[in-house]
Image (cartoon, rainbow, N blue to C red):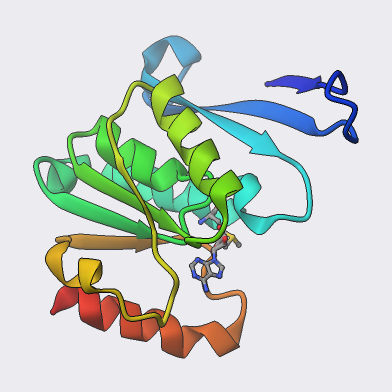
Length: 166
Ligand SMILES: C[S@@+](CC[C@H](N)C(=O)[O-])C[C@H]1O[C@@H](n2cnc3c(N)ncnc32)[C@H](O)[C@@H]1O
């Protein structure tokens, strides 16, 4: 894990960390099939660091990797996008989504994709909002990690999933 803070801009320094996640063999790092580097900022913004469910879900994607090959996968509230990146690594066509008005999260997603050499589509998608783009996506699998922390958002998330499956 690498950590740095850059205060040369004159703004308050921010703690940026890159965490490395291994997928593959279980006996030593040498057995691992690939690793994913995630750029994180430990701050109040929920989408800028890796939440625990995301680690569990990405392990599930790895374990089920044969189901994920050659299909379209969309991640809702992806934040730092670990499950979606793993899906892309095992051969899915991936769309990563998060709040459309949060350019910091969306831009961090792009940096993470570049760092891991995966070509995912990045899309602003707000839960519960109608957007004609949604109807054209047709993902085969919808991923979401730690997106049900606010029960008030459940209905909106359900709506999104219904549109995406339409
Ligand atoms: C608890 S974080 C989980 C992030 C990531 N899935 C993970 O597990 O590391 C919740 C994510 O949902 C996003 N989110 C919250 N409300 C949203 C909304 N109304 N529309 C779209 N995304 C939203 C946040 O920006 C954040 O990235």
